[in-house]
Figure 1 (cartoon, rainbow, N blue to C red):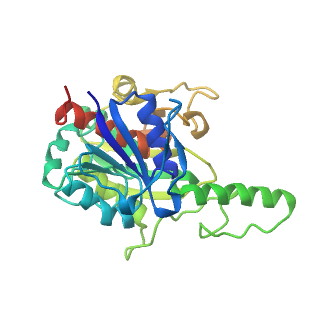
Figure 2: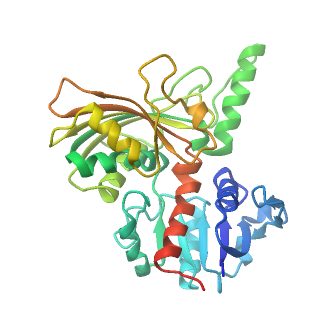
Length: 341
């Protein structure tokens, strides 16, 4: 027996990726529904490469009663309205927005990192998916933390425009084209020109000068991994369509060598170590697109501190940073709580 699954926000980048990954991973499904706003009602949507198509339904009229799992990729506004309704109807919500991440009654899950925390989902019938930049980082940190106990993390991100949705991808494409033909490249989605540029600003500014994206990385890492770990982040938007990269500096309580870190990461779940100290012996964003793994390269010791390691972390933000992690949560939920047959 399979599950009855709803994908909310099915016409967006992440929603479509959720459908693709559900099909790719052969998630056990008896029935699937694609749901979005009234603007998308009636649109035909592919269920991955399965050959199956479905008509998008209007969330305003959708009844979640009798459905097992709802994967939400609709943003905080619609989620605030419809996630509680789905949860109250007995449908477990796995939410990709930031709305519930720091709610103490909602588990924030990366299955390779804190699978046991999912057991708390029954308090609200809601499970939160972390921020894209946080998800890939904690996958890399977890096995190293288990070995040598992390004290402090300094991370700089290089985040692709797909993190800002279709509008961000369209803006990079249009600006690049306009520059080549001599037309204006005025910013609309981003605060400055993104083509051939980098922007050290993602989400809104907070009172302390950090951005909300940077705050998310700090707060979410503490909730998922360990509240004692100190984290400081600088988040930067770069002119890459898909794939987030991170330069991570880690300070440990206990001794750890680069060789030990490589050996640990090589065997860790969800990680692919590609770390040859030669030209091209590392992974870049363009090579991670469409892959499930979080790629680690450039592992080396930091001689400026005791027990320090530097590494380079790359992942498809639409996958591990969003859709894949949500589907992995659904798989974990099925194994631990919603067993069929």
